[in-house]
Structures are given as structure tokens and as C-alpha cells.
Image (cartoon, rainbow, N blue to C red; front, side):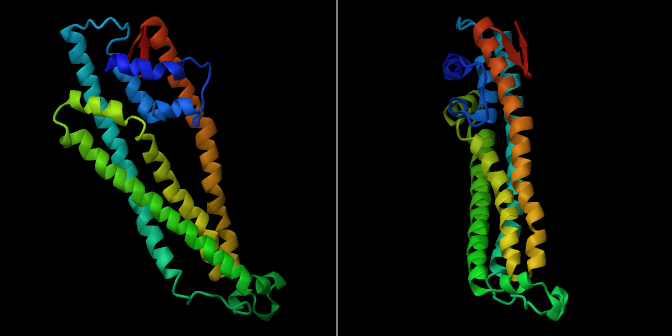
Length: 260
């Protein structure tokens, strides 16, 4: 397993820098899969194939911790996706009843003195287009949340009681390391797509509600950009540095540290 992990890491570790959407980084499972591969590769950092009993025991203990951390991550992702699911489904269904369409001269919108663009907003073509977009985005949110929940429901028991011991879980992880990165993607966009749908779903309530709903919608992109540039890319490069030193020097990686 250690030799196989080293071979998987080599093409990616040959680069000077990396980024979150680097194809080679995705091949090693992105942040989630790469973290596991680094620990497995550290079992035999020199590639000699010679291990002491103490080395093996230490590695198995660290691997048990790896799966505890992995299951904690999957539990958290399932919880967030489930919350998005329970919000998106009622919003989508309630938006289909046709009772929420506003009146452009309603007193809450300024009455007869309402701005002209309120009345234009009430036009059937504009509302019809917004109705389509809002329902498509909310349906995609429901899909993403259900996909994340389903993946977690499969992965959690796989790394807990489906497989009987740490070694079998590690062997399964070697085959499954590329899939774990998708949990974060589906979980994030279950919430992000829900936020993006709000301005379009609120269009049938009032132009005021729809315009104000743009604020959380914009945050879906701004937060994603922050996570990508301030967190994800630097972390990917940090993992790359660990992998490069591990493969070049025969270092030993445990708890995120490299000891030459």
C-alpha cells in the first residue's frame, strides 16, 4: 500500500506548485484523498519494504485516527446537506402554489406611487423566466444535498463497520481516495445553489424581497472565492511540499509533520 501510494503521489509531486482544480491534484483525491495518501506513503518512506513491529503499530494507530477524522468530516457534511435539503424542498413546493404573486400597486410596495420598474417587474415574461430559473436552481440544490447525504450514508459505514479492521479500510481507501473530494463539493453547493435561487424564488413576492435576496446569493460566490484563494490553494501547496519532501528525502509523515 505504501509503494502504491507513493506511485500515485509522484506525478503530482513532480510539480513546483499546484491548485485546487489541478487535474493531477484531483487524481490523488484533492485535499481529502491526498491527506490519506500521505499517511499511507509514510508507512514505508524509503521504499525499502522493511518495517519493524513498532513502525507498523504506530502506523495502525495513526490510521485509526485518520478514519475517526474522516467519519467526523462525513458526519458534518451529511448534517449540513440535510439542513439544506429540509429548507430547499419546502421552498420549492411552496413556490409552486401561485399564491405569492404580488400586486405592483399594493400599499406595501408604495401603492399607486410605486416606482415604474415595480410594474415592469410584474410583467408575465419576466416573472415566468425568473420562475424557471428559481425552480431549476432549487432543484439542483436538492439534488446536490441528496447526493451528499447518499455518499455520506455509504462512506460512513464503509469506514466504520462494513470493513472489519484498519488494514482493510486502508486498502479500500486506496481504491476510493478520488471519491471523497466530491462530498465537500456537493455539500457546499447544496447551500450555495439554495442561496442563488432565493432572488428568483422571491421575485413572485416582491421586487424588494428579490433585490434584497441578492445579498446572500452573492455570498455564495464571494465565500467560494475566499475559500479557494485563501484556504484551499494554500493548503494544496502545503500538501505538495510535504509530498515532495517525503518522496525526495524519505521523510516520515505523521500528524502533518515531516521528519527527515
